[in-house]
Length: 372
Image (cartoon, rainbow, N blue to C red):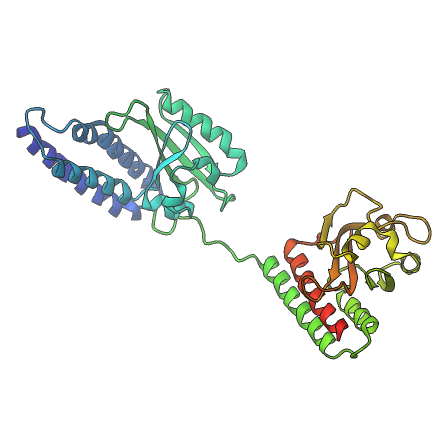
């Protein structure tokens, strides 16, 4: 009974010390190393004395009921979760076993997602091997380690990581406790988490440009002539040229392809590509037969679109770095109305999947307008 009372007193004192550590987060940066050392000491105290006592059932001469033991374990779990420092428990393979609240905020990874996954997956690629190696060394009992890593979501901010070995309860293997903190900042409420992600202005701009392109195409199709599919296709090609693609090749029909329009940067190359038989381009023929849209970046087959009237491969003549080739189909199962092929040349970003999806949507609208 005396040992039980002593344990209860020690536990209450430990809880008070943790509360003091929480309050110490506001100290100056120069004093933070002392706070970190104290926090590590308290964690070591939990692992070395309080936790083994619970696992052994307290005083051997005292029978403690299961409900009381569960209560004590829940208390220690709560202490772990409420520690002001970002803390993770990992095994010797660096797989996460537990992540406390501060760590989920700091890493931006939910505890439920992190548990059972390697912690290296949250780090920059260059740091993963070193982190895994140091965790394994600590798990082998070679002493505590420290290293600087970078989180994948915020690779510009270095994170100081301290690793120490624990042996929770009657487990056979050592568990590694990882304590994280910014390498160039304190542990206050604002610095204990990575900076909020900055909006990707380039991505926002590209999205706005696609929205404007859809609007321009819709207006062109709604205002285009009825009963003249060739003219509608020409107008659609002009909407896409320049703002969306460096080159636009528009072919009408399916079984008998007819080249309607070619827009590009080189007048001589435009004439030679316009004079090409569309059936000489394997990608165009495949699309005309109802194939899926094709997106190629740095295409390896230089004759995927055949040769132009001068005998040069179209992809070489237009200096193509990426291309989109889409069939004009009003709806699945309906006849193909034509094929649009778009090129981008060197110096311009390759077509993205989002842009390919947008063009596929516009292709259906163009085909609907041509069918009227």
